[in-house]
Image (cartoon, rainbow, N blue to C red; front, side, top):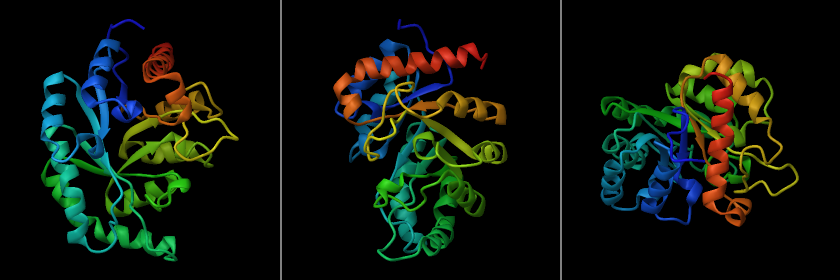
Length: 270
């Protein structure tokens, strides 16, 4: 690809170049013509201000910033304490949305109980985010990563979004196998903060094992087409990691992903 600007609805997650510094990633993406990124608080570091300043000076727009790992179902003040740095980062990055996975649940706690507790505990943090001008959301994680969260389907994430008044991050990697996705897209697309795009080859290990779009078994063109038909108007975010990406190299893997997605969005007249 050339350094001409890529399709305006494509963003690239800094996670996709996990072993690079953020500075190197920004330089590469800028040269590729990418103008929009997403990232996680883990990539910002602690304290995050140096990287926030670096991103601010790069001219890159930030579509979303995410976090995860902490329990969010103990009490509302603790939940706010865990999410306050995320909301701070979103404000500092002039980013309209921030998201989290649900966090772990205690061993042997039924998912229904954990889900109800999460709904009850998110109100304070959500109110703080709204006052800060940030739309707070939840991302559904893979069942293979139960230690990170117990909301492991798009259907559950959408229900949580409705009950707790949260946005939803659509991770195609973690929902492509679900039934009735077109209906979920139609009914909840206005709640979607961003859509994460990557591929997966059936038969390989599920955990942290993604591929460049078009290299795997996921019906990505169908999924993206259904999202567009439903009225989704946000970014499609390239986000992957795993052995196939490491073996190919970030430069080629990211460039091929951007080209694959840009070709289709352009051909469809998006």
